[in-house]
Amino acid sequence: MLKVNEIYYSVQGESTSAGLPCVFVRLTYCNLRCTYCDTEYAFYEGKEKTVEEIIGEVKKFGYKLVEVTGGEPLFQEESFPLMKRLCDEGFDAMLETGGSLSIENVDERVKIIMDLKCPSSGMLKKNIYENVNYLKSSDELKFVIGNREDYDWAKGIIVKYDLMGKCSILFSVVFGELEPITLVNWILEDKLNVRFQLQMHKYIWHPETKGV
Image (tube, one colour):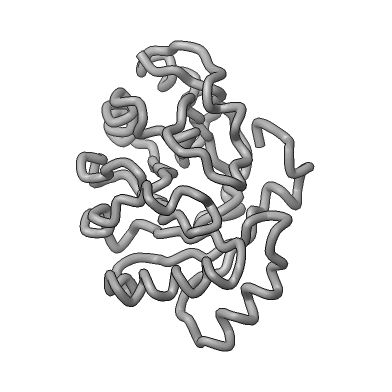
């Protein structure tokens, strides 16, 4: 059984798949408490569902791109067989994870979008840096930047772990804290080969809207 916060159909708001229609399976619980968290409602709210029930609901939307997210989806052990089952059923499965739990045993067919938490998140100590060893070239590594300290820290991590070219690297701003143009200017000044992204869904709908 898995505790599921919501299952919904929308457009992908982030990553290199931004703008594509996608089915989201948001699982309940999270072991992090980031200062900028926008899904606190997923910490505890949800209903128990079997993998079979989840797959059945996903199929009703009739679309192949599916993202397992949270909260922190890997907090529930049953998320691993859920992702495997999605792949077995022919879905293009993605995982959005905070980088504080091991991704070693995630099915290799799943596209992983993993955070490394920057200092302003308050969760720096929770990063499992060994996870970078399990990232595939098709995966994506995300840094959410809230200030210049975060930016400089992220640049240092990219160098320290030789991440450039390992997978796609995403830089985004903490919504409402750092102006997008500021981060873009830093990236351009440093000629940093990373992908800038916005949380598209927060510009299409009200930033606090659920289920989008």
